[in-house]
Image 1 (cartoon, rainbow, N blue to C red):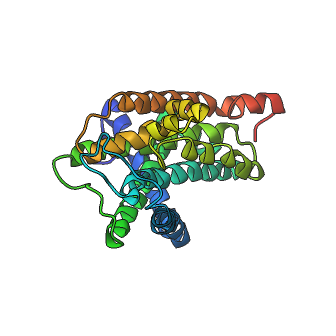
Image 2: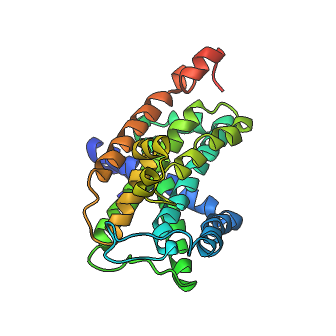
Image 3: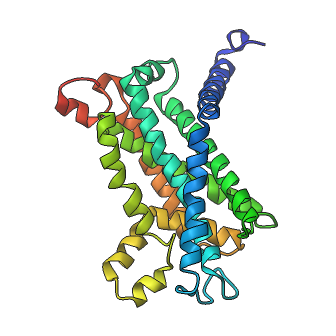
Length: 284
């Protein structure tokens, strides 16, 4: 039965699901034609794992702290952070795609569809998260092949999947919010340098919080505690070992809800896509 033949409530639900499938399918199709994008997404963290971790394996020792029950090599410690790197970079690259679609007029056309604006943006967010998780899965498989297996299969798998999906959605929502305020593609590189690198390096992706505190880097330690990417990495890290992640899920989910709500408010075709357009005097 076609959506037009259904009763109005069911017809609306069918159209919403059709839109979700269409948007996700479009993003997957675009990605399938960009083989270099997958290669760069996997090679970047693999270089950190194979080169950086190898070089510092005997320099940085990780003590027996939660969630670990024994001493671990450095490459095992940074592996969850590198999974987070894959999710982070793809979430931020989604901002570039959104800015491009907006400059080409595709976003305006999409947002005028007879569906709630938040649902259209949620569909874009689901597409971004799907691509992020696919790339992360490829990285986990290749990391296992080069000798750094991650405990992703077992009783902890459902919790880990929940953590990975939530973190991918959160980082995609941050990228979505950034795309509201990035007016031109030329401004994208600078904006990313002020977002990606601080989020990654001021987190527990490369070193535990207690190391930062022990070294006397108080401001770095404080910034890492308030960094939502820290909580994303810690949630996945603790989920891999079946341990309680503490407040990390709450921080991730609250950040996801806040960023998505602000992005949905900012993407208003009648206002020209956000407050910056009002100051600029017109739509993009």
